[in-house]
Length: 242
Image (tube, rainbow, N blue to C red; front, side, top):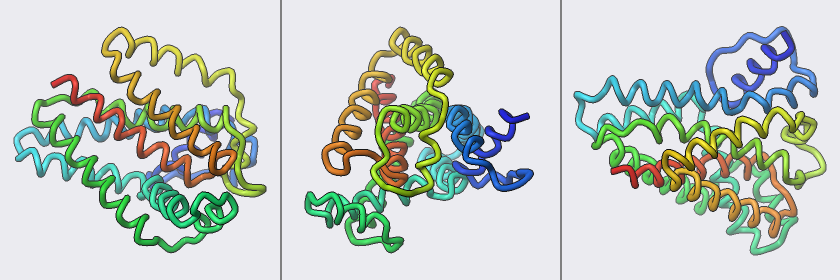
């Protein structure tokens, strides 16, 4: 039962799918929910790939638009918000840790955040068009899984940059059960198509390094930005299948 509650907690936190919990999740349940992030990603990936497959008769631009609408709608733009806030903080912070964290905490979006947000959506839409024009659905299914698996890796290997925050409770997540699915997925992809591993891994390594250099850790916003950029990395790597 506690694992079912943890899965529902992850589903509620990462998506807008209606979830009925018995009450406010305890910190231990929120931490355990981290184990189920990739499963939530798989559910999202199946939905996206399913919509793409069912829309094969449509023009590819419409097909890509429907997939992107579902992608944004189901997640509520949560990670896009983190990407925009991170972009504002990085540009406005001018290399200063405290100033960067202060700007990222502001709920208002700035010019840099708006620009990065538009470019991210345009890039995703363009990559989806390239993949769907060749009826390649694997990267579309895989991208949400890898994005949330990357968030797991970030939270388990990187200190939290703030004294307080929603993501602070996730540091208590048990690390052991997380690594096996990661290793298995990486090994399988290395055999099937190495670029689907190498490009996202390089992206993860660089983004984590940037976070440590500027913030000495991660925040909820930078974790959301990581998910968004890792999804793009998987879609971009998928173009090599053409």
